[in-house]
Structure formats: structure tokens, C-alpha cells
Length: 222
Image (cartoon, rainbow, N blue to C red):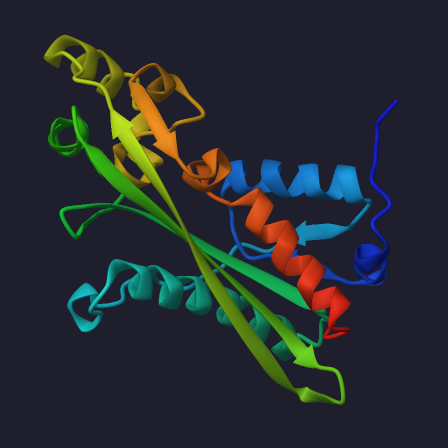
């Protein structure tokens, strides 16, 4: 029998139309856990935001990832509003891997993935995930509220052999992952330690997400 938690402050969300503006299967699974444990409801509407912001326009990687998550959430919120669909809460998310203040995007080829992983091995790096909430103002639904937060997790790779990296790249697992690896997959064998939320590395910081949702409901904002 599935267990659930009856958290009073989250009860108001049970009647809300919550949207995850992401096509990521990993984020979908994390949200499903939230739904299962707290009895919430949500649906997925993948964002069509182009994700082509100029990184040089931001002084910090955390600012870039935050602005991208806002873009994703806002695109879905405005599209649903234009289509006369209700959205009580839209959640936009973006994750980046950063080493030496350089953002490592999703590699498009095995060759690029290999370059990234060689850069990461034997060293520590940061994973930033930004989450943006967009929801209509309670007393002024024609306007919306935007709230964002960024969570950082430090990850340290072991000194992986060239043969190990090559074998991993040939699985093609790195090709749709920021930084060229998936902690929840085969790359788990290469990670020496982390400091922070594991789920943040996967793509959505579950602890911080819960805290921020509870804060919104406690403040009676949605």
C-alpha cells in the first residue's frame, strides 16, 4: 500500500492545476514522487523556450541558470494563458554543470562528451539547478508572480581511466545530460563524493522544492 504524508500546509495544492514546464523524464519522476507522497496533482507541458541566452551577459553561472528557468516557465505560462487554459502554478527548471566558472552544456557528440569528462575527472565541480514558480496574483489574476531559487551541489569525480571514459561515452548516455553525465545512470560508478542534494544533480532538488512549495502555501499565495 502506497504511503502518503498529510501535510496541512500543502492541502491547498491538491485542488490546483500544477504544471511542470519540462520534458525531462528525470524531473518527471521526481515530481511523481512528490505527487505520490503528498497527494498532489500535476501535468507536464514541455517548454518551447529556445535556451539560447548569451552566457557572457551574466556575471555568474547561477544567474544564467536562473534566467533560463524563468524563460522556460514564462513561455509555458503565457502559452497556456493565450490558449485559455488555467495554470495555478507553473514550475520551470534548468540545470547546468560548472567547472572553473565555465558552463558545460549537453554534448552533441561522443567526441565532445569525452572532452568534457576528461575535464571533470579527478576534480570537483558544481551542479546548479534553478527552479522558477510562476502563478497568478491572488487578488489580481491578470498579473503573475515570479519566484526563483538556485540550489548548488558539489560533485567530485574519481580519476577515471581513459578506457572507462571511452566505454561510458560509447553507451551514448552522456549525450542528453548537462556536463556529459547522469548520476542516476552509469556515471554513478565514477563519482567519488558529493556535498549537497543528490536529486539536485539529477535535475530537481526535492528537499528545497518541498520547502519552497510549503512556504508558498503557508503564505497563502496560491
